[in-house]
Image 1 (tube, helix red, strand yellow):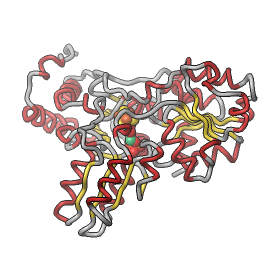
Image 2: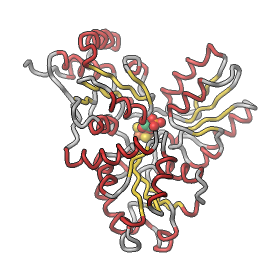
Image 3: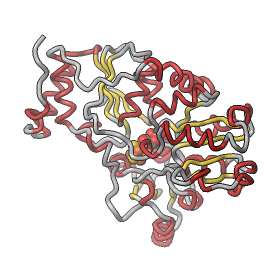
Image 4: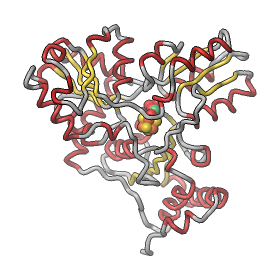
Length: 365
Ligand code: 13P
Ligand code: SF4
C-alpha cells in the first residue's frame, strides 16, 4: 500500500482543482462512498454531498447507508454518531479533525459526573432525573446518558424526547445547550422558574438545594456561539421595516429571540417551512449564514425574500474548517487505499452511547 498523500500538497490547490478531483474520486469510488453534508457547510463543499440534512436526518441516513466509506462534512460529534450508529462497520471520515463544535466542548464527562454527584447530595439522580444530551456532545456524554437511563435528542425531536423522559422520571438534566432545553420546556408549558441553570464553574452549579428540589429541568450553562449573535432588536427592526414579514429561528437561539419569532425549529424545519411559503412573502431567518444564503438564492425565483437575522457575518467557524482541499485530500487517499482521519469511537463508549442514540431513534421518529 502506498504512503498517505499529505494535506500540504492539497492546501496549494485552488477550489476548482479540488472540485475536479472530488468529482473524479466520487466517480471512481461509486457506491463505496457516501458524502454527508450538514446544512451549515459552505457551498464549495455542500455541492459535493450525496445526502444533506440536519443532525437527525444525517444520523438516520448514516444508520441506513451500505457505503463502505462515509465522509462526513459536518463536525466531530456528527462523525462520532455515524460511527456509533453503524456499529463501527463503516469507515467514517471527518475531512478536517479540527472541525469540532464549541457548544459540545462546553460540557465534558468530568464536569457532568461532578454535577451528577453533587445533585446526589440532595436527591437520588438515578431515581429522579433523566439525563438528556443534545446530539451536539462528545460520545462519552452520550454513553453517560446510556448508562444512566437517559437519551439523546436533536433540535428536531427535543420535545418528544423530553415527553418520553418525563414519563419515566420527574426531572431532566439537559446538556450542553441551555437554550434548546429552555425553549423546548417552555413550549411544553413548564414555567421558567422550574428550569434552573447549572453553572458548571460553581459548586452545586450555583443552585440552592431548594432550587434543585423544585426544578423540572436542570439546564447546563452551554450555548452556541453562532446563535448568540441574534437578538430581539434584530427582529423588532425587521418587523418595523417589513410589516407582515415572518420570522423563523433555530431553537439554539436565546429564549427572547424564540419568543419574538413566528416559527422555531431545526435547520431541516426552517428549510421545509420557507420552501412552502407563499410567493411574495418575506422571511427573517435566525440561523447560520451559509444555510440562509443558499435559501435566499433558492427562493428568489419564487418571489420569496429571505433575510439573515444579524447585521454581522456569523458563520459556524468550525463547520467552515471543512474545505474543498480537505475533502479532495481524503477522497484521493481513499483511491490509493488509505483511510485518513477515520473517526472510531472505542467500544466501551460506543455501546452505551448507542443505547441512548437508538432510544432516540425509536422514541421519536
Ligand atoms: P440541526 O442540524 O439539528 O438543526 O442543528 C444545528 C446545529 O447547530 C448543528 O450543529
Ligand atoms: Fe456547534 Fe453552533 Fe456550530 Fe452548531 S452552529 S456546530 S452548535 S458551534
